[in-house]
Length: 446
Ligand SMILES: Cc1cc2nc3c(=O)[nH]c(=O)nc-3n(C[C@H](O)[C@H](O)[C@H](O)COP(=O)(O)OP(=O)(O)OC[C@H]3O[C@@H](n4cnc5c(N)ncnc54)[C@H](O)[C@@H]3O)c2cc1C
Image (cartoon, rainbow, N blue to C red; front, side, top):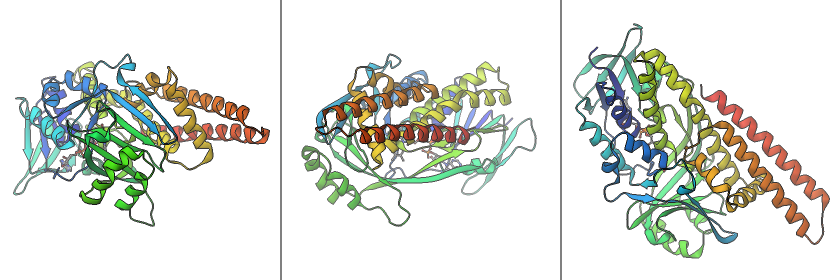
């Protein structure tokens, strides 16, 4: 072998996979063509399991340096109710640290530098993977093309960490299902837009939720989610419409920013590879699965995936094919849970459908109870990746929705039994729809 492992892509997924594999004594070659990060809108918030994973990889100090800031959890502010809901990370027993927030460009640079500093990791920059040959079962041959030369490397396995539009996935013959969902616009706003600087803020009440979280001591990022519409191009006007539904204190900070600041935007797709591995090729990070960033789980899963790959190789005593299969089995359900949760939350918080509005009130009611925040946050942060836990949570939310509807019915001056019956029927159909949706995600990730 020329090298033990070739990793195509030096973003978050590629760097953390190199860091994890070198802990087993594997020599890795990371191939990175280079990316202009300055105007790229991508992940900046890591949930506690991601932060704990960075500690396990020995890079937490590098990542927590100034201007990174700890995040203690989320506040949810509903336009119809002035009382904030607080979802603190430390409500979840499995969380051993706070979350972490830092500009995406710095996260990438710091992880890449940490990987470069390891003696077993070599970087080839200004080059990309351009061909994959698996005709010999004993190894995989990877062609790496730079500005002037193309070089072939024989290795034990190839990690595709080249993002959502992965070319390596195609070279390995893996198909993909791709669905465009939204465009997200992002701006920097003064940190004073956040009522509590230690917490991210989710503002609901408009057509879609607006997310604000700190990115350094003086600034926060605000993200606007504009659902995909084939007939029109989203613009900053759409953001201004969403701002109109926000509390006046937040609006004052944000309106001038939208008018003057160059926006950053990202087109959001749900992408799921039809297989997570093929022979000696394994997909990680966005190359494997990408979903709507509402749950902010992409980078945390890049880190978890890297640790799971390391552990699967150690468990299968370095038999690569068996290890990749074990890795596939161990991560599959997490990905199904993540995809289902992101879509369910988006349905509940973005749909104008009356039945889903009832469920939205049920979610908020549940989060105001003492048991809601720990169970929901464990799912959101990926500390709990069990699909059954998601189904149980959804059933609990429906119970809270039902109780809420009953009390509204009791308090109504004129009780209309047919309206209550309609709500019950609506909740049952939402449950059926969500179960069908979960079944679809199970088929999507294999
Ligand atoms: C608006 C937005 C907000 C988000 N917010 C969050 C958040 O708050 N928290 C969170 O955890 N996640 C978030 N995410 C998701 C997160 O950004 C991604 O999951 C994560 O960055 C994926 O990293 P990656 O390394 O898999 O892919 P990428 O970052 O896309 O990196 C892929 C790399 O592969 C390289 N490459 C491309 N082609 C080749 C080739 N042929 N050969 C070799 N290399 C190649 C590219 O140059 C690039 O460096 C967000 C995403 C978006 C769009």
